[in-house]
Length: 125
Image 1 (cartoon, rainbow, N blue to C red):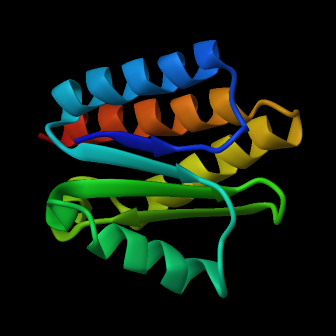
Image 2 (tube, rainbow, N blue to C red; image 1 turned 180 degrees about the vertical axis):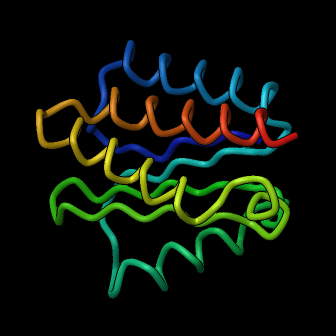
Image 3 (tube, helix red, strand yellow; image 1 turned 90 degrees about the vertical axis):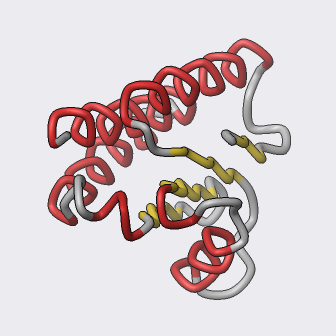
């Protein structure tokens, strides 16, 4: 199931937009999306991987972790997801998201990243 942990980073409209994007992307891709926006404790990749491993179905889940204050972004994909979405596509998604973040568009960057991954997974099906 989709989840957004976001603290005070988003307005209600932005949170709703992200939630809606997650639901539509899950239907399109048949994978689950989880978004964590908040403080990362320790190195970001191990932190993101630990979060990903606590999800209900990590093998078919994409975790997007953003720590805006530390300017960190991590995307962790489960084993089933990696069969459909290449590391290169994830890297391009990260670059696109970082571009949005640099313009101060946190919610837009997250929704853009979710959509890109879902569309790629769907096209690979």
